[in-house]
Amino acid sequence: MVKRLLPSLVCAIAAVANAAAPIDLKDALDRPDLHCELSMSAVDRMTFVVTNSGAEAVSIAIPAGAIGAGAEGTAKVIVLQTATLDIAPLATGEALLPVALLSSKLSPPGKAVRFSEESEPRLERLLKRLASEKDVPRATAQFAIFGILEDMNFGAWQKFLAAHRGPEPDPQPHPNPVEIVQAIDALGLIREVAPERKFALMEDGELKLRALRNPWCRAKAMQLYGIKVTDDGSEFGLPNISQLLHTKPGDNCPVCRNREEMKKGASDF
Image 1 (cartoon, rainbow, N blue to C red):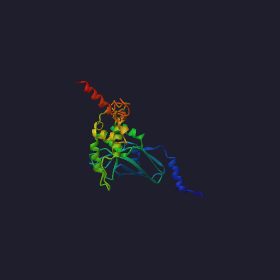
Image 2: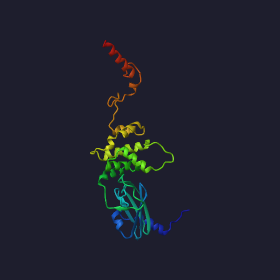
Image 3: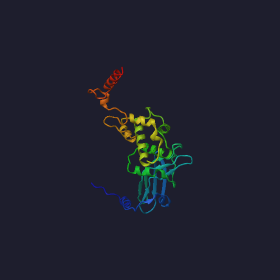
Image 4: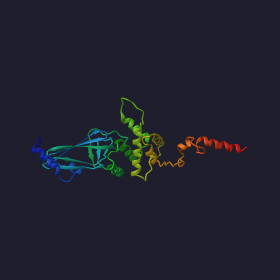
């Protein structure tokens, strides 16, 4: 049996479907028929709730790069992905916005936040890149932002994570393989969007060593650090398997190399 929708619900759905082009966030905040509330639902998410008291459906464009500010002395947050919120007439709509902190040195904002008129032009290229990679983990995006804004290295990132991790029911060693992968991905992002800059993270020996030892990201790290392996491994000094195992005479393995050295030594007498 086909159930019929209530006329009011049909009208509301049709009104949303036929809504005009999205209005700017600033215009939405200034409209008296739109009651807007913004709050932090988690350290990496904001909730934007809008009640439309007007007779027409409204669509609001929330741009990546919009900044939320809390109480004075707390870190601001930046919206990572563009969103559109559609609200039917006499209805309430809600949008969950992915965000990242703009400072590692200040505490996260409390629940009450508001949209600010500020902008952060240093992150424009990164936000454009994230628009094409919507599955980038939040931790990766956050580390990339700290790398661009604060030139943060891997040790400082680990301290930040430890401070915000809280007690763990089953403590595990850190950094774990996932955190290494996220850090390498963050380095890849900042090098891509700001190739003209030199970052402390690129020169971070601890991250480089851990990444090259981590099978989850070894290939990616080798590419990022410009490490290329030729057939004989000579380009960066890593031997291939034929140089480690004695497979045939003269294969340049440790046994053969030792024999050659002994021959040279014997001829000196």
